[in-house]
Image (cartoon, rainbow, N blue to C red; front, side, top):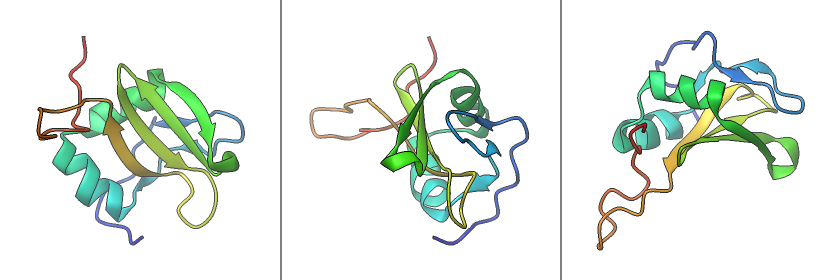
Length: 107
């Protein structure tokens, strides 16, 4: 996955079991397809990474942070370590699936 023009996000943390420390940006998939179309803003992603519950997935290669039904996945290994690879929510959307996975506003 190629990088797109998103800047380093200071203060975003990926600290669960072997986390690399800071979120260093986004992969093309997360930026172009997920974050933009699903309505996630940089501030939302930072809040999820700082306040969310961390879960190690894919044998430690990734960490999923979840907060109030919104999730981000941060890669922990390889050439894209520290980058957000996808964002999503548990929003079911409409009966026809419109809006499924879109950002769920904070309570």
